[in-house]
Image (tube, rainbow, N blue to C red; front, side, top):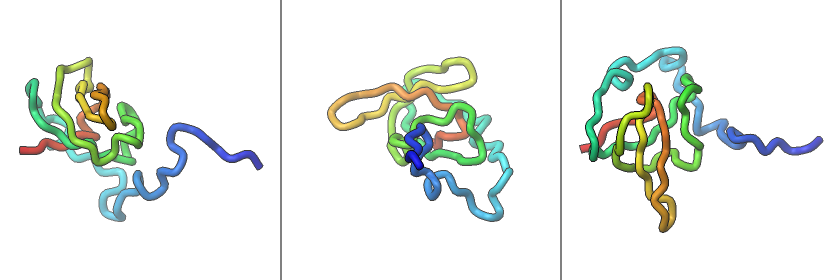
Length: 96
């Protein structure tokens, strides 16, 4: 059988949620209002698939650039390059 090489390949442990967190939406994370320049961590939420960034950005930190619809544009350093990631607020956590 041919091996799958989709975008979510190899994410079984990354996107797994705890037993008590399944199908639960963290409303504080969704309604949090960011401003330009705020530091955020990208933490993928397996219960929400909309606006989920690629798994290579899991655990990365970046800065908010601006808002794009219901999502936020985050500037993340990937190697020596700065990349922009569009992610909905369910997948972002504020840092100090």
